[in-house]
Length: 160
Image: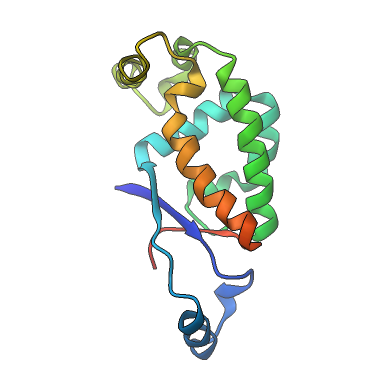
């Protein structure tokens, strides 16, 4: 199973009637969702951000339950998440990938974490930083969050 993310319709869409949906979809075909990562990696990623990013964690905590349970975020929540992830990325970039193993056993085995680090090492040809281990997840999140900000809309998990 994977985590998918797309730009959501305008805030309040969860309360729309069938007619509202038909009107919206006629003018705005549903966007394909971007695959972010596997659900297992998503849990590990969220844990690593919370564990290693004291500043980035502050902005992620208010929407953590929504992120874990893959629930939509409003326009403002998506903007706040985008800013917090930029801070978290810079915090993770300042740490060696081996830091991932510190207290990381809650969601991943030592073998899984070593495999993630080894994959980043092979991709880069050198010892990676912790942010580089999660580079693809950050990239996929940024693509959707940047588009959501441009369109002044929130984000939605999954394909509908």
